Image 1 (cartoon, protein in one colour):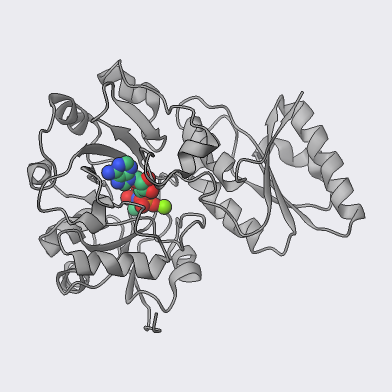
Image 2: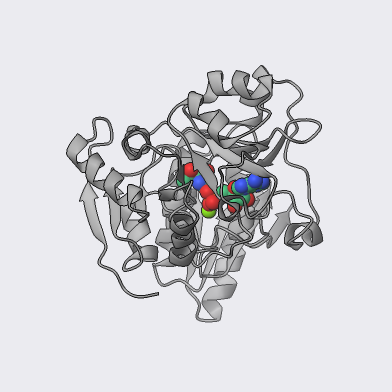
Length: 357
Ligand code: TXA
Ligand code: MG
């Protein structure tokens, strides 16, 4: 694709300037792309009801057309324009979790282009809670289709700088409202299956969903084959390698003490080969690696999953850019937001998980 000048405009995250939002909305109305902040990660937006606009998203990201997009709305009243046969469960969940990091899979309405849904009979919809996202959707007067604003298969962006690294020269405008609050993507919940089932864990935990709908099912373990099968898969974007740094990444699981000892041995082994190692750790692990020579990024206390989630992608991107030849990550508990954190770490590692005991 041809090079276009990328403009980065700072915007107040709480009270966005209305002239700036109008300007960005004009681009959306013209069928162009705008990168905007959400509470989860930055999104690469286009008019969701215009196929030609949506095609621009796939071109800018280098994303294949079989990977469907989430439609972002600013008002629950818009939902019937996007989805059909909306069950009572959807309203219950929307009342509790919207605006917020929950995406619902529902039967697609006729106005949604096949480019958005990858020709599936279903559509993904969410109402983000970031004031800039909500203001942009309202000013554009149309729902906005938006994937995470990274190059296909790369780590999602949680700052405007991350977006620039991936999309400079490929998008006309980035609205920079500072770092995203949640830091991992929305939870995707399928309401078209027999029981509501999580397809991608994210910013709303399984436990929180179950307080409203006790029958919500955790993500189903899928085999490698079904994950890569383009026709049979339920959530086509959920490829086994996704959200991944360009540096080989390994995830270590098991008892923290044993994991730390194993990591230290690995660092030594890599050092002997002349390789530099990057480490993604919790604050409390740091002192153990004091003299290891590794490049360390800490994502906060392992006890504070919200903090870990918000730092996770910045950590992976920072280690990737630090000149190391390999990245080793510790794992975290899978309670609450931890389920999403663990899922993204497994994907960052492309499934290369080492179990230590
Ligand atoms: O937090 C988020 O969800 C962010 C922000 C920007 O809203 N968006 C995001 O979009 O993560 P994306 O495109 O990177 O991931 C959306 C995933 C797709 O990869 C696909 O797996 C799934 O949503 N999806 C979309 N439509 C679907 C459908 N009809 N059925 C099943 N899965 C679907
Ligand atoms: Mg993505």
